[in-house]
Image (cartoon, rainbow, N blue to C red; front, side):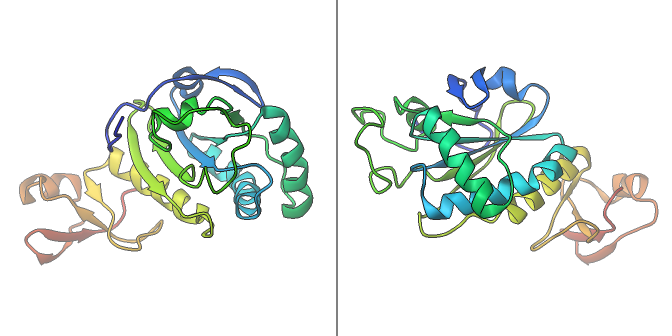
Length: 219
């Protein structure tokens, strides 16, 4: 099944390093980041999980949960977690899904639905497409999807920045420009008229073009 932004994130029940979960129930009223890995004990993913673990308190401040997925048994995840803490200096506390039957990877269109077999005998190369990031809102809708090659580590600072942007723009009628970061000016969305903008932003804004109006970031 093909997935698009604003689709409802497919729900599932799975075994994780923190017990069995129903995905939608686990998300609850939070934001969530589901990020997948082709195989346990792979070098790039080891660094990613360590850095995600380091940033987990920052995501928690934003009411955002992390959950990983790898097509390997949960017991393997537990062993891998020891390597991650030893080499990266941060313990992984968020759950890791053991997707041994490939069900979640197929559900999220990371593997073909007609892919046969289980995790047994599969390699990182055969699971190369299982390297995606999904950001899911409290409404259970997919807000962002990114897929990376195996040789390129994901940028979790960027993922944190995107969360900041999404949460800001969900609350206010603004958009964030290129390379935006916290505290930078934002864009008043075109759907807001100047008359309405005067009520929303009484301190004024800078008009570069009628469709491009910059204003200080709302608090």
